[in-house]
Image (cartoon, rainbow, N blue to C red; front, side, top):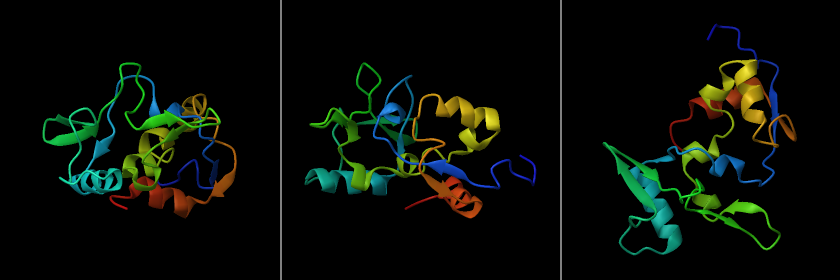
Length: 141
C-alpha cells in the first residue's frame, strides 16, 4: 500500500450481531497460547486448555474449530435469534480487530466486498485513521 491510505478519512463500523464473520468458507481463527488459556479459564476448564472439538493444531499454530456448516464452535443463537459469540469477552485478537484487517483495508474494493457480508461495515461508530491503524496493527490485547 502506498503512503496515502484510502481510508485516511475514517470508516464506520458497528457490530450488528449477525454472526456472518463467524461462519462461511472454511478458514482459521488463530489463537495464541495465552488466548487459549484465557478462553479455557472463562469456560471453566481447570486444565487451562481447550478440548479437541474446540481447538485444532495447524502446523505450529492453533485455530478454533468450526462446525460442519462453517460456524465457529463458539457461535450460538441467543433468545432473540441473533448469532452471538459465547466467548465474546475473551474472544481472540483476530475477532476483536474485525473488520479492520489488512486484507479488508487493501483497497476500497476489498472493503466493499467484505461489507457485502457484514451489515455493520459502513454503519455506526466512526473510527478515525489512527484508531483503524491501531486495530490493524495490533499484536495482542
